[in-house]
Length: 103
Image (cartoon, rainbow, N blue to C red; front, side, top):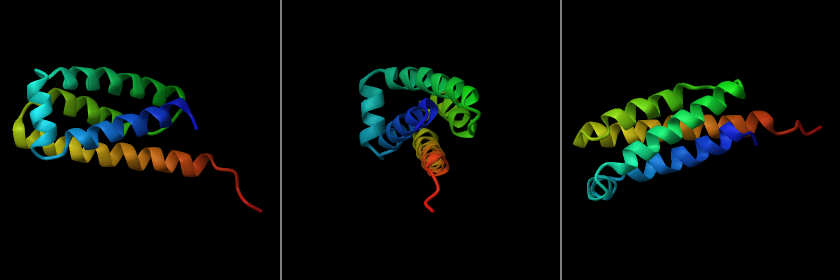
């Protein structure tokens, strides 16, 4: 499993958590939007590793946009959920592509 795939699993899981209605938003507000800044950095790192590994980058780019718009209540929740879906699908497909063929 490549570094970009590991980061996609991590960022996808975190985005799914932030997308949980009420809980995710409450924590983001309670921590003064610090999780959005942390996630922005994490998505940029994931993007860099994805480019180096020649993997799909659309999940990371969506994550960067989500981190910038995540402070908007309903839009943020929807964006977190969509980003989580994209990142987790990418990570799953990367795992599937890297498995050796069974003969």
